[in-house]
Amino acid sequence: MAFLIGAAVIVIPIFMFSTVKWNRGYGVGLSFDMLAIVSGWVIGIMAAVNIYEINRDQEVMMTTIHKLFADERFLASGAYLGSYIMYRLIEVAWESYQDMKLRRSS
Image (cartoon, rainbow, N blue to C red; front, side, top):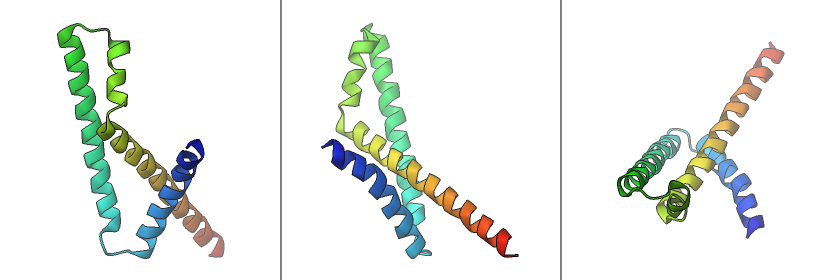
């Protein structure tokens, strides 16, 4: 299982990057961006509500907050955001490489 998770961390952002590069003009990049915004909202809202409930019920935060980490919506949103951040880093690195290549040729 650890191997699959490690492979997914590498493969999914590369897949996202190549999908955007091959399908320019079809809104693929915009859909990735919008999904990242929704994922960020999901994580933020879930964390805020969970912390509010812990404070309201006067529970021990360190033991109770871990319920949040087992929630499928939180895990899915976090996994997507992790992949999205890596995809954006690959995109920035690719643009820097293209810029450097352009400067060297002129």
